Figure 1 (cartoon, rainbow, N blue to C red):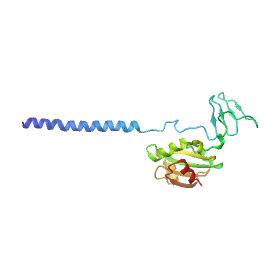
Figure 2: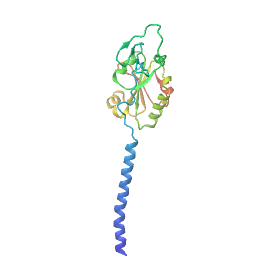
Figure 3: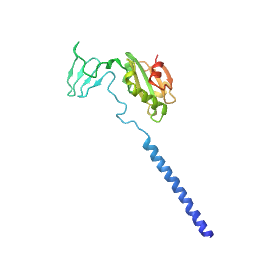
Figure 4: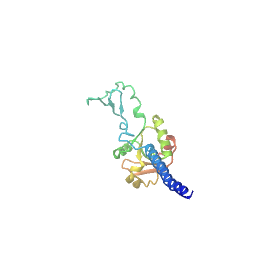
Length: 192
């Protein structure tokens, strides 16, 4: 009987180790499968104030239309505005961060939204902004800054955790900084 008991114990320990390894592997696969990585095209939008029509024509803020073949056409004073373009200059925007977009602060307000895909409150604000794009006030540009990959920007603005918002001027100088706006309306209320 002792030998049989010992052989069962000898079998049980490797079996427990195998089960633990299986749980770790399956859990790791599940973890990495659910993590979202920003794709090169994620959060990219037409530059602020531009609109792409279904036929591929890009309408710029000044009314200039760039056809898919590259030809440009300037909208004449009093000419009708293409369908879907009216009011595009009346709204703000939510777009991916790029250094050159800070210049938009020359004509309005720019807010950097330090956001992480793994942050539940960040996902909540991101979803609320996207659901209410038409409610972004004219002249306000919200720039989506990927928290995990923006070390230099985090250092520059003293950002120590995600879901931080920083209003900047065209030179990148901080005007205001706050955290935790749960909605677009709350974000807008903090803009100076």
